[in-house]
Image (cartoon, rainbow, N blue to C red; front, side, top):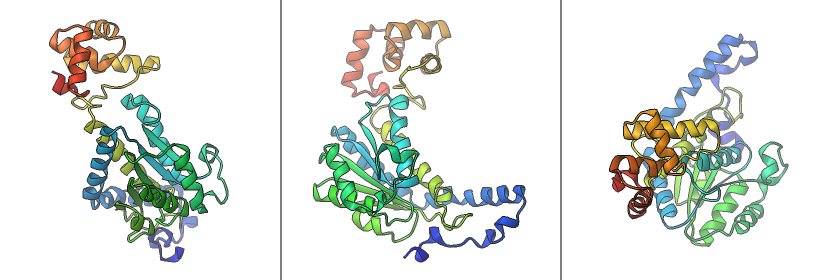
Length: 294
């Protein structure tokens, strides 16, 4: 029942929320938000286990597939959408599925989150593979759409994970690697787009970033597979080459052009003084890891 969920409890610090000044509202929200990273810290070992599963899936030509409804679904879609420009991944490598489909990202689709069958159909539509990893996201930990997705994935022998914001959540029982962030009651009762949403966003940041590091998408702390799809990212690419190779702007720009805009290749070319073709071979032999290629 909803009344038993910590995310649905009333917050004793905000019983008079409508009588507070704007400054008081902002301060109490800020104070409550500070609790989120600490709650996440209690689940680091579970998050690490899920990241390792994600790395294994990606190295096996599988995908990371997020599933959720409402805010949880939107956060999964957002994280998936950020991976191609940040890490140079193909659009289908990290997938975000939201109950009700793409239109549900901006407009609520009534009843979609209550359908387990819809989740299995969505996974069938993207040709779920045994090499994939399915991660269900639900603040309440009880969303039928997510349970349906996890159940279907498990029936096909697919590894599953889950992210909820309640202890002993229902979706954890359907997940191989459950993460339960006890984000507590919301400033505005039941509004899980607040602390619960923040908790989910932070965990998703951790999963996708750490997984991409694990498959060679990062050198030092630089996003060396960034895709220069606009002027800002072209300049960022050149700056990454400058930082990685301790080069000046003119040199970085020249190698950026010689590598055809491939930052990793430009770095290897610069640091090993080899041709673009040789740099490509070094990176291929190193499975995309710049440090190994060097």
